[in-house]
Each structure stands twice: as structure tokens, then as C-alpha cells.
Image 1 (cartoon, rainbow, N blue to C red):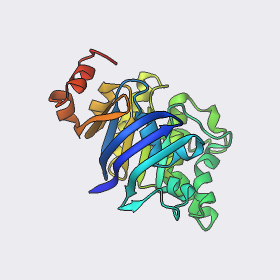
Image 2 (image 1 turned 45 degrees about the vertical axis):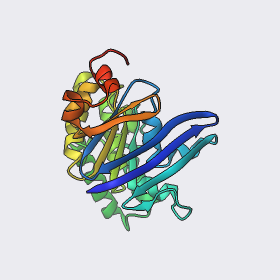
Image 3 (image 1 turned 45 degrees about the horizontal axis):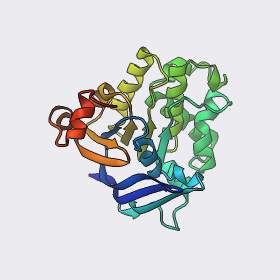
Image 4 (image 1 turned 90 degrees about the vertical axis):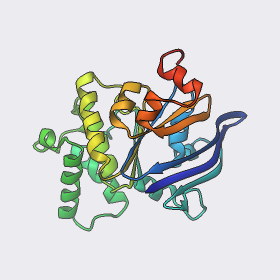
Length: 251
């Protein structure tokens, strides 16, 4: 089932044409990876999907971006509410300077998703369990989120993102700042999360894309060159540029 779709999306930063005519269907309960060399537009395009580019004054976006066939850029759509439905995890773990509990409780509280403390406790516990970190933090919920290791902080940020019950989870190179063990934990977690959410991940690691995703889009110089089943993209790409990137001829 298609969860989000874009049609003829262009992104401009002032005079710079950063994304050119991108049309893609993002499927529900599927991990879609965006790959490509640095500066090719994959993170810029990812940020269009929850209107994070709205915060950049010189950024202009044209084309259609739909979620469940509704225009997410319509005047009637509140970007804050949209970001509760389309959660985001960034490259560097960025827990709030609050307790582990308050990091996860923050979203449900500001969006009015819980009525009382026991509901909130339940959401916090469930989110931490889904982010595969509950066992490590259940006895230290009042400690600062910043006291955790890098890998734990990133899983806390994932718990924070899923606490608002999003439908889509965007991840911008979520493991690039982590060591191999923490990276493996995040990859395992992504595999679990796709049973509940549509997950879109930007990664500079082709091995990671091959391991965690079912669909892959290859970006190059602002163009989406090719999009399809991950196994096809990696074993039988249609476009020579994809072939060159995957075999390491550039990038």
C-alpha cells in the first residue's frame, strides 16, 4: 500500500536547484533507503516529507507531496501536527537535556495524546520497549538522556520519535555517528520497526541499505536516478550511473 507519494517535486535554495523533478511512491510497512554520494540531495528530499525545510527561509518547494492522498503542504495542514505523524531521527543523537522519561513523554504531552500520568507512563514504557532500550534504562528513567552512550541516545531518540504514534519514520543517517555494535543494534531495530511504520532511511552506507531496506532510491546531483526493489538496484541496476556508484567508480 502506498503511504506517501511525491510527484514532480523540485526544491530550490535561493538560486540553487537542489532537487529536480522527483516522483516516488513510498510504501507502508516497508523500509525505503535513499542512497547516493554526499551532497546529492537525499537528505534535502527526506526533509521535504515532514516539512523540515519550512524552517529554511530561502527554501522553495514545488510539486505534489501526498500522505494517504492528502497534500501535506496544504494551507490547512499544521506542520507541527504533521511531524507527529511523520517522525524524524537525525544523524547525531540529540536527546533533550531532560530525563530519559521526559524525553519520551514530551511529544505525547505537547500533542495532547494522553489524559493522565498512568497513560503517559504506558506510552513511555511502550516506546522504550519498541526502541529496544527499555531493559537498559527502566531503573534510571529520572537520569538525564545525555548520560547515555551514543547508541543508547540514538535509541532514546527513536523512542521519542515513535511516542507520538507516527505513521512514517524518517531517519537521516541514524547510525553514522555510532560504533559497529551500536550500528548493528539500530539496524536490527529498523527491521522490527518496519512491521509498524513506513520507514525511510538516508544512508551513505550501501551495505546498510542492502541489509535493512526493501526499496532503494539512488540520488545523484539532485536527480532521483533510479528507484526499485533493493535487490534489483544492487544486482541489476538499469542506469549506468547507479552501476558506477554501486561498483565504487564514483561517490
